[in-house]
Length: 432
Ligand code: ACO
Image (cartoon, rainbow, N blue to C red; front, side):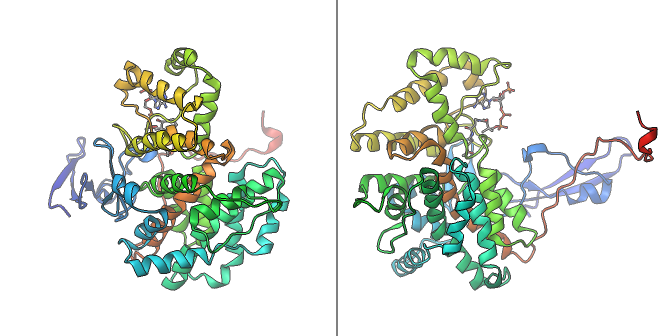
């Protein structure tokens, strides 16, 4: 508790109740609203969780007004400059940066869990060639619950740890299998001698008919993108994982629910939508016409990759990705990438426009990520899958934190019911 107290008064009856404030280590206090129901018999109403903290967490901190993002206290800029995705995954899951030995053991464990059961691989044959890869990834991750049900006791810390390593290791393999299924190409088995991102690129792009050499610049760029997408506190997909997990369900099923939630264009699907939007706009000359449609309330368009529920200032991840775009496109010999040129110009024009200024709409992490993914040769339909691979680290960390909490409760929101009041059933022949 912060010691601060608030009083809530029923102005009709004069009845009062006290709300205690709880302080975190940083950030706004949270009011404990339990007394509202106990003393007034009322619920609180907060659609979209605009003002509700759903849990206590030690994993990630965001200050949306200042544009700050910390994983376990470490600024995203420092992690992006110095760390690796595997180290960041360790940090998110275990709470501290690993020692060299811990990092080596964790990296080894992830490398040696990358294969998936052949039977699981056959699940892909049930999908049509043009199935969206997010549908396949969600279904196959969920199918893992069927494979590991007898070795997964949520109350056993070692089982939870094995789950964490397995899902992190296998999600790139499953994602690559979904891509190969779309292409009609043979599946490429993982290699334990390759690091996380190099292995992933190989599984995506190699074919058995010829040698494949991983481009180190591409692997490095991918690693950075994974770091930036690894966690973002209680976003829609993470909250979905927590809500599903709070029932005690198998964790693979909970992660699958997170994949589904991530898919939507308001969340992880935005990176795919940004590329579609840029291709739709086509040239710099069309930007103003497009923005006029976005600003028209009846136009039904949004500037994809702009705006964020929490960041009302620059998204720090967008800054890092924009800088990386220059570097990666330069190294890949694509300095004149027309999509990047268009995105830069679109950002510049939108940031000077009163509509976006007054609503505090800035580029988010996904405004530029699609430009890099496409420069790496990753097709648009796979962008959200790449996001899911990264966010698996965050989902796992949150599930582990929640499940180890002795005070964990099933997530069960209430509602403001506005439907019909009780009425009697009418026999079908008497209706109409
Ligand atoms: N383009 C145009 N107008 C926008 C945009 C946008 N991208 N985003 C918000 N607005 C406008 C709304 O129309 C609204 O205007 P109004 O006050 O005149 O009605 C105002 O800004 C507030 O918008 P809300 O939808 O209430 O903001 P909310 O916080 O609920 O939405 C969201 C956040 C969903 C991210 C939204 O900004 C959006 O749809 N952006 C585009 C999709 C996107 O890029 N999503 C990725 C988010 S980051 C991630 O998930 C990794």
